[in-house]
Length: 249
Length: 99
Image 1: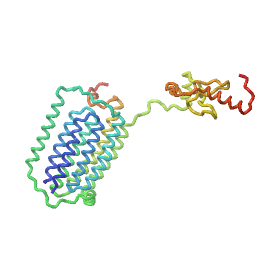
Image 2: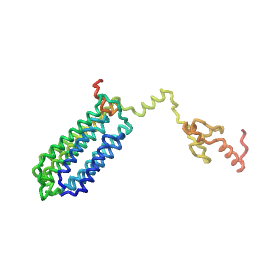
Image 3: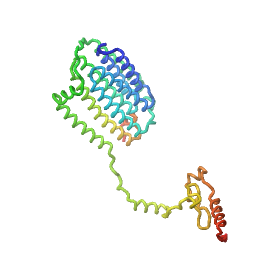
Image 4: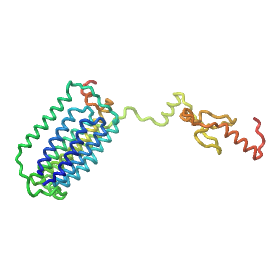
């Protein structure tokens, strides 16, 4: 027999978690709640003498299926808002009434069952399952193999996007840039050699004037640049110390 | 405690999953509702397997899991295809059947 503690733990865990499907706003919260419910169901399977199915439940549902859901959530954007306006008036209440009616119907049908629980449960160990799967059910297993291959190919076909334009070569990209009026030559690299070889100082031209376009625009907007003139002056000062002739500027 | 209690639990979970499919507009959440219904059916199968004392119910639950995995792959691919075409995964918008 099943311990009531196990049953009530599983029941509360799964029902509360699956109510999040109805009431949670963010899809990621729903996904986490469903994962919790699936773990609870895995515990129920182990309690019902089906340890193999319990493990498969964890591996397939929480490990593969729900991760796939979360991947797709990330792909389509987690902040997809649900529109709250109802296209059919009163749809929400009708749906709740229908679902509660369905639940009541199922419960009343189950309560009329006369069941006698088998005293010695069959083993749900992997070995016993395998004997059945590859014995009487082997044809079904092979059909499921076909189904899985078809599903994989189907997913590839459905998500495949044909290329609308031929791929542009590097040469064509460059030609298009020149035609758009871009400078064909690289910009000067920033930094002053041996003094301040960093991105935040503008390069100096041969006359000792800073080349403003060598510094990234972002750094200028953030005012994270330094004044290059100081490095020029420092260089001249050091040259003078070492006995170089005074430059004629 | 009799395993039939788990069948009651399965009925409740199935109803919650059905309500989710009917109420929610987000395609992914509605799809998770379908998954919950499949899991509820699995729980009923495993419970009956325990009641009957043989493994046939567990085998059927295993097959349901495989079919559900295949179904999820194709369903999510369809959701991605719809998202690429319409930039939304709301279930209301594709219902218009306009080009």
